[in-house]
Image (spheres, rainbow, N blue to C red):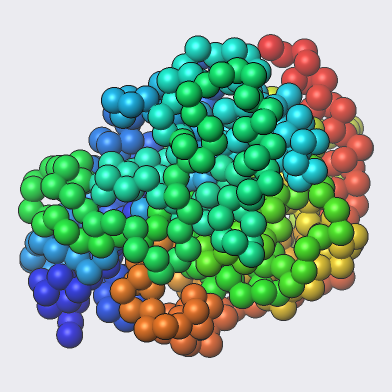
Length: 529
């Protein structure tokens, strides 16, 4: 069947992902290939010292994104989307969305970017003997409890952004296991929240006398391929303002962007890994065995089918780099030269590769927000050089490219050098890899490992969640890794770039300078309030 027939017969599958700067919808056919897409640009807001997106922005955003998808379908195929085989919803992981019994949000959505939960995360890490990151939902709720915030006693439901959207579209309070593992640690044997930790937390808060215990307010955990409800009439109105879409479409379990990144890069098998590099960055290595001990900078999460994953999550990646590129764009406009942003990025990125392997001594700290891996509660973007450093455009851009994965390197050095984690294949995806070969070469140097990038890398998490929706209806008894290997990727592991000794040595010198200069970043945070 051609794409038009697939859409008209209701066999197309829809994936929607809420990223940090863009909501993206991807429509795929019955062979899992993208046939249409839509998007909506949005930005988080700093309100009362906390990063958030409003409920209004969430729904206006998804409606605009879906309308954009409908327009693409109309333009390409001159038809309408009336029904779909399945839908999947994905979003930025973690954070805090707490609702009362009237389904009203009790405090503005607190995103993964917030670093105000240090006391709670430290106490819970001690209690659980397990690293609990600042951005996890359990850290957020316990911080609210420690601060005596009034709304806590009214909580009826606590979920993530993906879980919230899915709940409103289907009426089901469920969450994919990967996203759930960013709310509270998961026991990979039971494929559910860790029972011992649930017990410890309930005992910890018992003196507060709340009407709820933890499992009362958390979503039910589901693995990839399990039924997770269907689109309701209410859900149709929230998604499609035209009212053309029909209710009754099945949805797969909602997942976090880490899980969809693993799926989109065929990295859910043991000894595979992926790196997502965009507004934030994270690496995910699927483990053969548990780590020898907990590490403050390593988060233990799961694949969408429940395998343990070591995750290094960095709050900052390309935002500062993009800001500098936009400065060059403004300069080009001042000269009256027409601007093609793909060309601007391409020229600057490729020129960076002609610079010194150690960036000539230049250092960039890309901390738009705080960075827990390096112990910074707040961020101050900084460019640092001394008078004797080799200050030219190539080294300047290379320093910013290195900075985009610098913190990622610090975390992965623990896994690959100290824990001796074995990885057969690491795949890169996200905005950093759009300019062919450059981000890939930089990341290969950073973690001293070959990096693959697939042609589909640009499709990202929206495609990943569409594939999980496809797995829901076409799994035919296959495991998720086998389904991806046989039905989606068919042995295509992308184009690989191996690190050179010179690049690895240069990056190691850069990162030593970087670590030595963290005191400068800390001083900037302290001095500029």
